[in-house]
Image: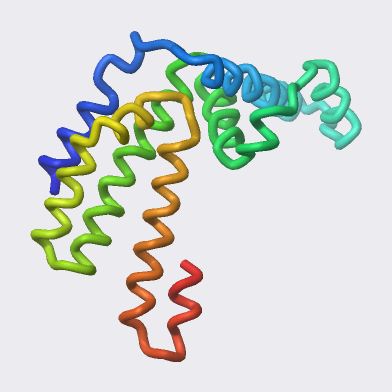
Length: 178
């Protein structure tokens, strides 16, 4: 498993800083996320300076920045993750790209666990190995799209569903809920 994760991480993160954004939707995501990221940095600076932070002042700052609605409304979970990353690391192309790559590597872990739960350790290794080298998964893990995060959370949920089938009947619905 460590070797598969290392290969998967290398393929997903290699040269990512030099890649940049290649598609319109990737740039739109960055544009939509930079507003909330800037508002979050503004709020943090205000608090550190001891200025009162109110809902009205935050709303005014959001309006001042002209935060676009589009992508953040359609993919708000992923957009919020990108905005949080940009609030910490600054508005850079690398933030959403690295986030997708991290979700892609995390998916390898969940696929291994699902395969192991359903077919044993060997099945888990084979499943993780296939996904680590999958061109389609590599593409989306190296792009600023929400796809890698979607597959990550799908696999996370599937793993908990599979595990719920092994739980006693009275605990199944609780376990399936994750």
